[in-house]
Image (cartoon, rainbow, N blue to C red):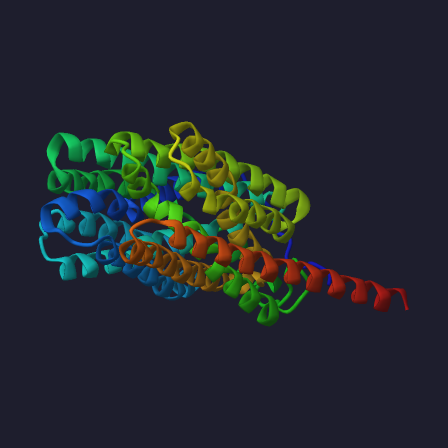
Length: 409
């Protein structure tokens, strides 16, 4: 149970955090572009919400599968090379979407956007942060993932404004070009931490981790929890804007709810990142999961704009903590030598949950004509996640107590 993987933190680690924050801002923002395209796609092509939502499902599945591949590759080849590939593909896919009228091709582009574009920016850079920090890893990861929350609010809003002014095709084209300009220069700043430059160090061979429990036990547990926590959060992330427009709100006002949710998410990721440093990632994850689960269903129970803003702010605060703490848990539960792979595995199952959650929300809307069942399913998935995480908290506590008894003897 002794943690022998302590890392000496260096100031340059904050440069890595800054680069990662930008990467996650634009990466997460790109993921939600399909939510803002739902209305213009329905108007121009007559596609159903479930069929349009499938693009996000394929993006999520691609991000999950790609995360495993690129997370393991980053352990071997370093994060910078992988991130450059991701930046080029992500930017290119956004541009190519602007030329399409075939939904099947749009599916393919979003799959590559997730599986190569986003996955190459998400898993490697977060794993790299975990290798630069030890005692302050929670706040460091919290800052980077706060960028993701900011991107999920700001970029869809900018996209919505551009669609209103220019049309959806030119909006997507301009977005893709902007990504090239933003991402490529800053990726030159990514560097491996000193611990990885000391070849043959004990940290690179040890199986020890912060929890003192075999990662062969805890990582699968976290991965299963990740599926259900992300089914819960996917319903508002993908369908809050359409739900709000169904109440009679104009597109810009409806999108502003997503902005409010994500700005609150910035605060939530910083708060829960810092909380993870004090309480441990697992306890912070448990608290955030309870909050997310309690909030999600109530979006369907009001048409009041004030209430929708309030729910958006509360949900954003808790949901953002869930994702941040899940990644922190993966870092804590795994040995240093497989940090990228551990983050990738947990991230992959999370993206599976996001894909399922986003699609089921559109499907049950098409079947029932409203979002009550969709958000009810999200709440049920949240309850399952809370039960799994609560059981893991208990199991870890039991393991620590057994170890203390053995030491006392």
